[in-house]
Length: 260
Image (tube, rainbow, N blue to C red; front, side):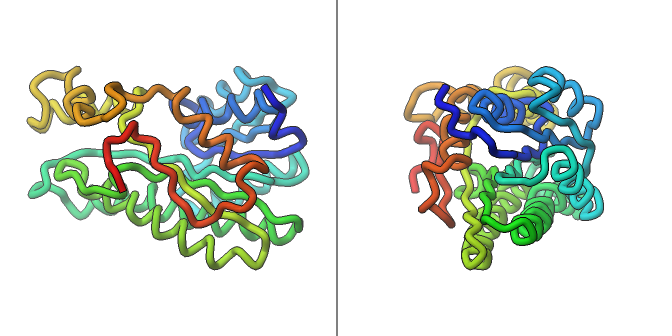
């Protein structure tokens, strides 16, 4: 532990479990006070309690609701005085065969993954500007934002949108000393993928309920799927002063599955 985040306040959406919780815990371990935002408010509170009541707060919010996100910003500032880092990490996927994708399926994924990222960036940027001193925004993209997959068409489109929004915000917010970057995981062993295993089996994209993740990851150069611990180092780098000169970039953390 190097205390790279000492004195900083960081907000992580979708932070109650999986990769989001791993990032939140790592930030706290490095000295940050952390606000965990999740659609499941009770889970957010449990996650905050696991980190420690003095250094973490759990807040319920739907990231696709501007009112909810604005309230989450206000809760963070009320609890800790300011915000220094914001992770737009909340997201979900509901796979369907390409020809069976519906308008509702497309809209629901885009609203959380893409619109939620836009709203999060806008609302925290307003807070950064009001408090002064700049800030850091980190978005969770995906290898699926660099390469489309037929069973993940809306998800791929939403993560491509996250990449474009990251670049647009980096240009649009630079004058306020706000940096905006993203990281793009590949196949990470989290509860999200446990559900995707079952979902892909049910739509005929896997031969058994527990094989889809391994089948999907067969092309990983590193030879294995990622664990949350493989992701948090890059997340900490982007949140810390080590990345102060970096903006508008997307760092791939997929073990070499997609080379760009």
